[in-house]
Every structure is written in C-alpha cells, then in structure tokens.
Length: 209
Image (cartoon, rainbow, N blue to C red; front, top):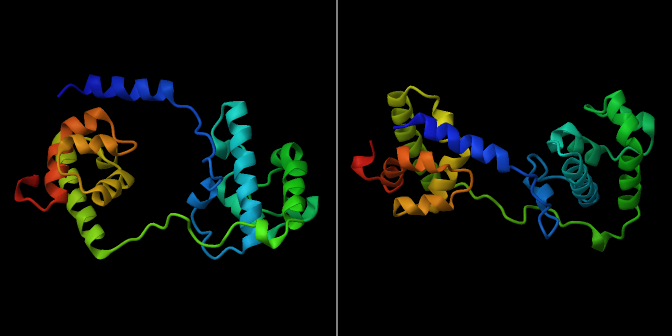
C-alpha cells in the first residue's frame, strides 16, 4: 500500500477546495446543530446571517468561521439584538468583528423583524436525519472494522474513515465497493484500503475483517 499515493490524493483535494454556494433553496442554515426549537423569526435571522456570512467568506477566500462562528450566528438569531451594545454582548462578537460587521448584522435583524409571518422559514428540519436502531447497529459494525484496519496500518481511525463517512455508508447500505464512490468525502485511497471490508460489514457478512 503506497501511502505516498494517499498523500498525493489529499494534496490534490486541498488544491481544488472551493467554498460551496449556498443551497439553491436557501436552506443551508438548517444544517447547523441545535436549531430545532428556534422560533420562525429567529430562523429567518439565522437564514439571512448564514447566507451573508458565506457570501463574505467566498469573496474573501477564507473559511466561514473566520467571519463568524456557527454558535455566534445562532446566538444572534435567538437574541435578535437591536443595538450595538446588545450585539456586543453576544459571545464571539469581538471588537474586531463588531467594527467590521455590526452594521450588516443589525441591518439583517431589522429586515427580518419587519417581514410578514408568511415569509418566515417554517420550523423543523426540511431533511430530517432519522436515527434508528438498525442504522446505529450498522455504524457500530463499520467502526469495529475501520478500527481494526487502522490499527493494522498504524494510523488514526478517523483518518481512515471519520464518523460522518461511516454514518453515510450505513445509510446507503452499499452492495458493491463501487457504490462507495457516492459517499461525499470518501477518498479513492480509503475505498481501496478499507472499502471491501466496509461493504462486508454493513451487510453483516462474517468476512468483514
């Protein structure tokens, strides 16, 4: 197994990474954690803040969290401050962030406050992630196989296949190794190294390890 080829694939991927455009339906904000019980007007603020932040990040060619972290956006959306002093009390709103972005943020909040109810986002996930017992059992089988192969190779298990990849595999239930090419974030070298074992594990076959 040529680890240099693995590294080359990672380098190639890093060179081609670009920020993704906001989802066409404007629902990208729903991927943030901890917003299930948020009121509709707060969701409206969060939706616009999320789109605003990602647009700034793409323009500046920097990660979105360098503009403002997810937790900060969520806190702003929940509190909906109506003044600079109130905004400054939100965690993550450092003097630098306040100087650069407070006007934009307060403007967004003001715009959403004036929206009629029917124009606000609906509560709840548009694409809920349903966790069932069988899914969790498949994930556990995959973890055992991944951990065994990672130990054999002497590498960190999360490098070989992180948890979100295992969960995606468990949900997809691939029948053949080539099905793993559908998994976003799974590398060619990972499929080559552990693909057969993962496909066997997800189906519960005894030849998984």
